[in-house]
Image (cartoon, rainbow, N blue to C red; front, side):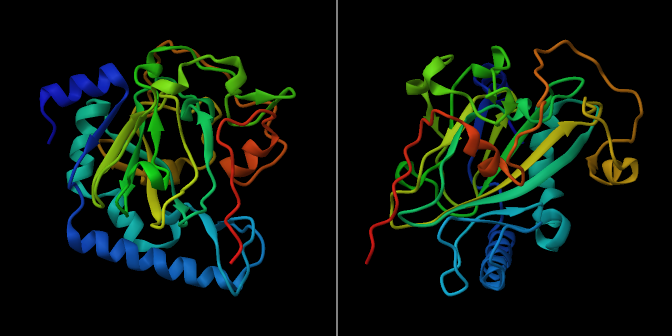
Length: 293
């Protein structure tokens, strides 16, 4: 459970890192399941509903940059989405209406590789009737400055919803040449494996390439308050309510004014944020290809 000082710090800065949330058994089982998923990617040559592949992926040398929606196809990740110590923290940060899982993914950064993620706000992808929403980063490896940890701009959740379009289409990233926020003020969210980061849905964040000799695997869950309803609509009411990990089902959204830009027209490159961001003209994080051996 968080202290009142922790909660106040989250609301002031837009982020929080809590060490040692995940127990050793669940961490071990999550890592083992991820290892198997990566090994199984040797059978695919293109992006699928499960895999988003790194450039250079081959069956002989699998390179995966994202596992999509792991809670829907790998039981341990659904178990972890309902992990009570994490849910108790979410209840403190999101309020009394309950906690709903929106989506999940695992972003992987291989040693001396690992695609960066350009600066963005999650809110730009899925605006709701209120912004009591956040992302949890479950650190499956130690996260440190050199292996491309998540980085956030403190206090940016209190500002506008910035333009995430390029050439008139949604691209899921901010153009750094517009200098809308002070990117140099970014704070890396580091910690030991089993720690968790929490960042507000409007907090500007991104991550650089992994330049270390150690992997960085981050399991990400997006959660909302139980009474935050997506402005883009609900496709499956039953599934939407199955994802309520705390609280009671309601059909009464809480509507609170918040700055919104709709992610429309859709990104020309679909499949994941990595594909969305390919149409961003100006990149902040320079990608360096690994040295050939």
